[in-house]
Every structure is written in C-alpha cells, then in structure tokens.
Length: 480
Image (cartoon, one colour):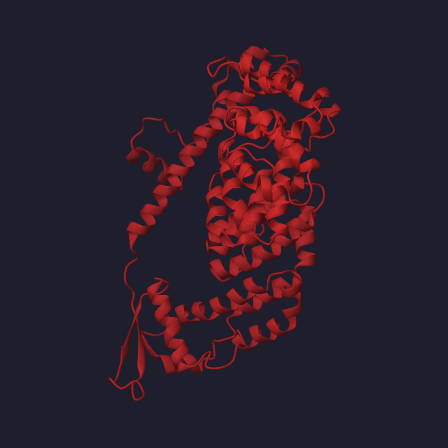
C-alpha cells in the first residue's frame, strides 16, 4: 500500500512537463488505478485517510478514484462523511486529468446529484457543480449542463442557472466511434435528448427570472432541432413557447422556418388547446378568455404550465391597459375597472378601483407604460384617481446599451467560430472530406483547402479585430 500511495503522490512527475508527456503519464496512471481493487482504494492505510495525503488539484485522478470507490463500497451514511471532500474536489480538480476519466467523474457527479435531490436540499449542490462546469470549457456541451439546470430549477436558483445558460455553446461532443471507446462500455455518450433537455431547461430558467426573449430563444432551439421524428421534449417546449410568446408580444410566436415538417405537423396536432388560448388572448375579449381558461385548467395542470398560464392572465390586463393609451389621454381608474379586464378569477377586490390603481402604479414603476396618476381630493374616500397617458419619446440610451451588449456577444461568437473552424479544418475527417470532394470535381485538394473562406468564417460582417466601434456599428446598420 505504501508503494501505491507513493505512485499516487508521484503523479504528475513535474508541473512543467509537455502535453504529450502529461498525456502519456495520465494513461499509465489510469492503468494503475483501474487495476487496483476498489477495496484497496477505499479503506484507510495505517489509520491514515489517503485523501488527506492527496491534493485534489494536483492528484485529481487518484482523489477521484478513491472517492468513487468509497461511495461504491460504502453504506448509506458514506455520502454524509465524504460530502465536504467531494465539494472540495469539484471546486479544485485538474480538468486535463479528469477529462481522461469522464466515466468515473460522471459516477461521482451522479452520486452527488442524487444525494442532494433525495435529501430535499438541491441547493447545496448548486455551487460545486457550477464551478465544475466552469473548470472545464463552458462553451462545450457536457452532461453537466442539463443536470446543473435541472438542479437549479428544483432549488429555484434561477440566477445561477442563467449564469451558465448565458455562456453560448459553440461546440457539441461528437459520438465516439473509435475502437477503444467502443470496447469501453462504461462511457456514456451525450445523447440527442440531453441536448433537447438542456434547451428546455434553459428556457424554463429564463422564465423564472422573466426574461421572456431569452426564454423564447432557447425554446426555439428545441423546437427547431433537426430529426426524423418529434420528441416529447419538443412538444413540451412548443407549448411553453406559445405561452412565452403571449407574455412577450401578446400573440403566438411563429414556428421557426427551419423546423422539420414532421415536427411542424406534430406541434399543430398536439397543441390545439394552447392555440385556442392564444387566439382568445390576442382577441382582447375578457369574457372569451375566461371561457377558454375554464376549459383548459386541467390541460395546463397536466402539462405543468399552470404558473405560466396564470402569468399570461395577469399580463392580459396590463396589455389591455397599455392599449388604452391609443384611444384615451386621461381615464379614471374606476372607468378602467369597469372594463372588467381582471381574468385570473381570484375573487375579492381583484379588478376593483384600488386593485386597478395598484396594478397601474406597478406598471409605471417597471416602466411598462409612460403615465402618471393624479387624485382629485386629499381624502382617499372622496378622491377619484385619474390616469394620464404620456407619449414621451423612447429612451434611446437603454436601447443603445442593449445593442452594444449584443454586438459584443456577436463579436465574441465570431472569434469562437473562427477558432473552431480552424480546429476542425485541420481534422482528419475534414481532410478526408476535401479529398473526396476533389476527386469528384477533378480539382486539387490543396487548392480547395487554400481557399480562405474554407478556413475563416466571416459571416459577412467584415469585422477586423482592430476595427473601431463606430465602423462596427455602421456595418451592423448596413446589414439591417
């Protein structure tokens, strides 16, 4: 056992070794760990805990194998004992080492995730798994992405989930076809359902913080995903997509043009109740909308969309109040309440003068509407509240700030795509493809590979890295 511990501590041999030498040492170290029985790894040696001798940031592979061995052989209380050590490992592991033992790492995360959710405390696993994602390349999709968002949804940690969802994914792992990977049945590939699930969970994350545009974007990714069939995940995403469209624009958003015909037919056939709800919402008739809601209560409950539907009903009154400014300059809250725009059916004073005034005041504070309130008398019992609608010019500074954020995001994506294009342009698969194309066309493969457009994505923006912001803005306006 002393020799085994010495081997653990002697890896890696130096912090400054080359990548090729490090990879060779990692393979040798993995071979040793895989040959060592779990019982030898799991138990203490001479009264000393092996994990206290190892540094999780340096001896990551040995630390990982010891943790998993203890969880495999341990009793029910093992996770409580090793909890702090697992958290420390997830926050400090060496990604280069762990990337070579993805199957073992995934087992550790599964143990960790199951313990957190089954104990009813998913929030305790949020920070460690978030840091684990960031230690890897967060722009490359992994099994951690959907698992983390599910964890955050259960813990209602929407901001933590949004911090990861805000990082644009630019790379998805390919299905491994090598002989070595095929022989290792323990490795679980990323599946099509994992990707769809992530898009759905990301959309739900932004719903939780009421960022409806970003929610619609992620739901679009799920809806328009290619395939020869339509997944139930896509059906669920489309139903939420309809409701998010009502909250965003007051009407259903169009189905993306890139959606397959199979999926398109499935959406139209399986979402008819939602389409009728959206039609009633768009019509602006409170009585019609109440009738639809009464008929669809069970449908929303079965689809777990009750909360989203209630938000649509609350938004209906606000949108109808906003529409009044196109007809009126001033209007009393009593006259607005008589229009009976309250459709949630909660009873009480909902929809009365006081409630209507509170709703309008909240809209003004959130800058949903440009208006002001005035009272005719100091005594609240004798006073009449009047709403004055304003046609103030839109504050362009907010729009400009948002535009600048999007421009920076697009520029970052452009650079990332150039890097990925060059990476895959030098891959064996791409070179074989170019050889095949050259043989079919009778041209030189080297001439085809020398084309700058094949090795450098530009997307028509023509942005040089040193271009001033004014030039970038001008290009953007020209493309618009």
